Amino acid sequence: MVSWWGFESYSHKSLEELLKLSPKNFVTIYYETLMTANLKERNRMNAVKKIFSDLKRILEKYSRNPSWIRVDGKPLLVIYATEEYKVEEWKYIKGKLQEEGLDPFILGDTYNVSYLDVFDGLHTYNPIWITKRGLGFSNVYRTKAREAKRKGKLFAATVTPGYDDRKIRRPGTYIPREGGRYYRKVWEAAIGSGADWILITSWNEWFEGTEIEPSVEYGYDFLYLTSMYSGIFKSTK
Picture: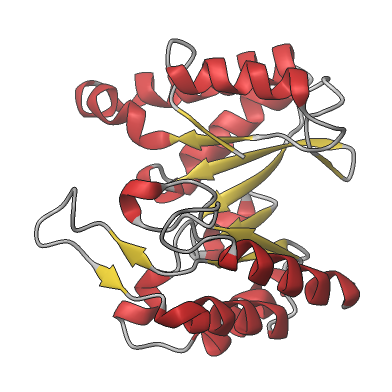
């Protein structure tokens, strides 16, 4: 999943390179709605139309690539900060895409189940808010999994190894990794919830301290844990 910030961004070049190199059913974008913030302030409808235009162009140009992930035969799109726009605005966007003969499977970044009236599933990008609010991962994930299933929609639980953005924000947020115990706890809650998918935040978002890729600090520890728990998750399906 490529964090995507527009056709002129470096992330778009990364997307094109990844599509050249990836196996079948491997790539999608994480559409960053925050890139439309300035336009939305000036003219909200123009921002909505920009999102439609971006997604239309992405789908027309790339979704037929064998590397693009498909769910139930539909090309997958994942939307960040879904609630920046209203349910009715997303219905407009999806309706316009369908008028163009494009019918993506859309996974929204929200736990507001009213968005399931337009989206095919929900998730949260970073679940550390569950820790910050003193809530239990198991309870939150089970509840959201049930709510999605009642509507016949998909629930993707998100796991993360910890969090530390104190180098880029003041005062910032620090959720310690606890030698891998935090990651284990979130994985076990995600698996136990009956989630359809499990997403990982993140592979390499170093500046928020959520990376699991090999590092001097942690070596391969978090890849080993990922391999172990993903195997357990797959065995339940």
